Image 1 (cartoon, rainbow, N blue to C red):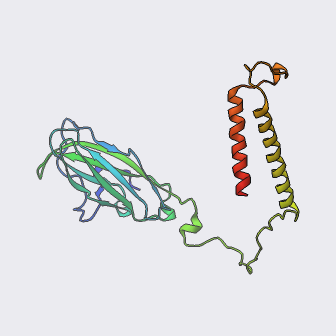
Image 2 (image 1 turned 45 degrees about the horizontal axis):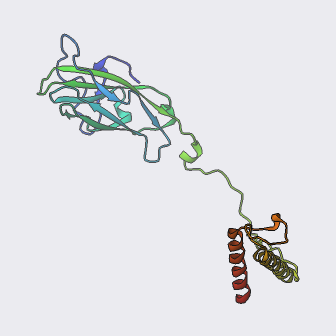
Image 3 (image 1 turned 135 degrees about the vertical axis):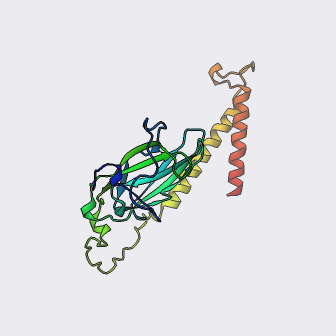
Length: 235
């Protein structure tokens, strides 16, 4: 990696015209802030589509600006649209691809420089910004190199039967039928008893007052008795 001055940087991308900065830098220095995101580029060697990053450049001014991308290691990168124009108060996406993801380039920092200049063939440079770039090693080197981890030879399939169902005793249906019949019979007897009991406001009854029931209780008892009768007739 070369860490020299801007004259040591080259334009990267298809049809790069050559070495050295274009245009004459302003004598008063850059006057336009270079707004780029992300501020640093981190490439992953194990990206399936190849190590690449998206760099967004924003033009905050009211006039169109010309941009170009320089790099200290142009042989390691390909920049799509490495040179062009940004419309006023607009942004443009720049795709940067690492074309040499080899172990010797892991964790080596390179630098990109974004330059903004006025329109025209000899427009002065009004803004520039340097960002760092680094290539990280893959998380799974064996998978990156095309080698899979050794696996044991699969043996013959083991056929297992389904979990046996729990069988009820043979007399279980009879027991259930007997229990249901007894429950219906007991409910019916209670309902009939409620219907035979006197009302709370009935006079002349010899039964104690605690055994007197309300009209609502009798209606409920009659309803339950009717349901039991319908179920009994259907069965």
